[in-house]
Length: 346
Image (cartoon, rainbow, N blue to C red; front, side):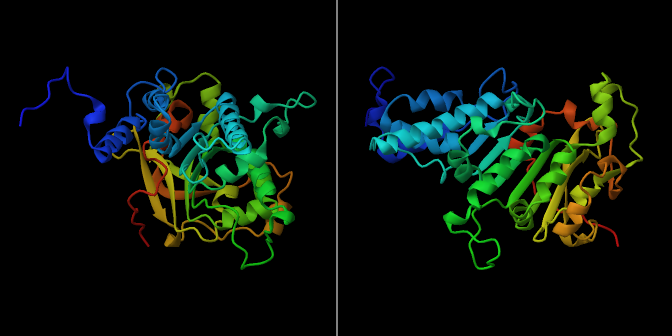
């Protein structure tokens, strides 16, 4: 059989199943690209394909939505506007454009957006009324793997409060009541400050953490955090590889009652300017018993810097300051954990 020449070949000549496979492959975001995401949008190819036709849009949208990156305020606002449009399509019964985002988003990264949503009355408090959390909450809480900056956990609190309203049929006191979230893996990034303590001190948030099975810490320890912002880049910091990696008190004793594994990023064994994901079984005994809700509330107002930290059997390097790393790219390329389990000596 004579093969068609390039000039005569048409994409529509392909079997439908093969065409769909090609479109799905072409629509996969290029997260591992050498360029930064600010320089080249990893979703650019998929977005272009989604404009071809309604048929192609339905094929590529799940590839776009599988992993959603919302590093800045404008990304969160744009995502909320997309959900608003879906609501409009439903109200107008535009069946060709209706698409269920909730079932497609499997991983989500939310960056530091707290100060960018500052209230005009109090610049230190976010004004969450600028976002429609009735649209955001079902999507955010449905993702199995959620990564969020410590400064943005207030958004998660608002979503949890929205999901736990009594009229929605969820009862926190009823152990048989299905949880209104699907998150199993939680990743924290950014500096570790008082927002985390406040987050743990209410019942919905406490219950949310108690259901997490894997936790990954991409947080910046206090010393590298301050030295970074005082203008000392990580590659000029004095190496201290003999120091042990420590977990802040309120992170180590968070109510992860169903935790199976927890991961941290630490200096590579072969190169202290690179990092690797180190995963420990929760049964290793490295972390202390979780705090009760009453114990967490007792630390309200207590300076987090005065609380003890818990050492792990992993050497840390000040050259691996996470403020100098592209944590968003690390997470989306696989640093959400869990990785290979680390054996802990008795």
